[in-house]
Amino acid sequence: EWGIYKNLVWRLDTDGVLTISGTGKMAVNTGLIWDSGMPWGPYIDKISSVVICEGVTSVGLFAFAMCGGIKSVTLPEDRRGSVWQLRI
Image (tube, rainbow, N blue to C red; front, side):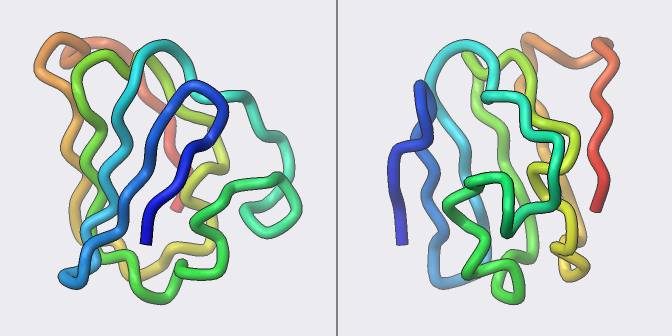
């Protein structure tokens, strides 16, 4: 599965890796995943890891809420050392 979310592209592969690429900030979402427009909401039970690619400067606080199967999150090399807040 894949799609475009505002200025970012997301892809969920068959291994459960959700990759987010593009440039800039993810649109801020204040609600939970299924009512905030996150397009990967229907697949939350399949997501096992998240990869944020270089160029993505931030993600919404609840972008991965209710994705309880996430075992790892990989941040872009150019953003390591920055403060990231994710609710899983």
